Image 1 (cartoon, rainbow, N blue to C red):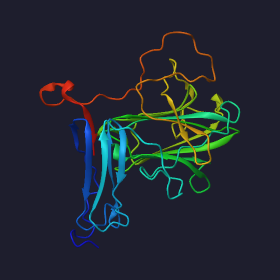
Image 2 (cartoon, helix red, strand yellow):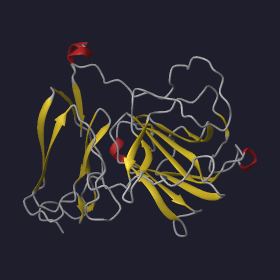
Image 3 (spheres, rainbow, N blue to C red):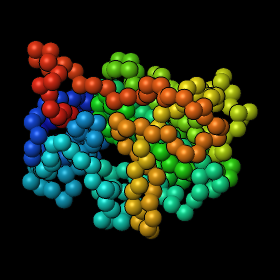
Image 4 (tube, rainbow, N blue to C red):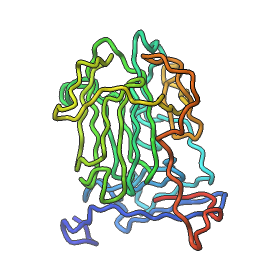
Length: 307
């Protein structure tokens, strides 16, 4: 029960605020008159602050906070910190997502195979999340990775090396507002690869959610282009452009294979099929440029902050 709003009269809609600010130090303050935040007494709301696709903060719960505000400082340009799990729940304290999958004790091509997810968000990246389970469904499977919410109209790439002794996996893609990634609010999409094979090519028109089942290692005959879940396996055409793999420390030591948006794509050393030695084509997956500001001069923009 809220003393400020009539029962069940909450909008459940996302909105965005985008401005360009000079480089420097900023403090973000989010206020809530009732001090109970956006979640979870009256729904499951949240806010996302990002800069040039890099998520700075996900918040809105106001846990152990009776001041009616959440406050944090950040620098522009923003550099993402390493994931931190101080409370030991296996999740990044800043973003709330699972720590990157630890494949440091496995060898790609022997113990594990590549899993690559490419997500292009629409105008409301705050609505986009995903979950990856080992198993055929949520009830019997194990959640091993997740992601989102994200910034708006940016491309995000996740690379993991997953156990490949015939394990089955299920990827759930969600849109909080039930409109998918396309086309009411932009032209988002997502793709799922293993190596240079395309497992799923989604145009983003899926409403509330989308499900993809696959097994590692992948076999051509396992996939039917006409199957209900839309999973398709076929060569992806030109050499696949990969983003730089960024080593991330795991709780048990070693490095974790994951990746973040980058403007310097590289080609991985291991691939299921040999690649011709030819100049690489222009990457088909790219980070969208910012809209023109007042007067049509893009050069006046320095850094974008999106809420």
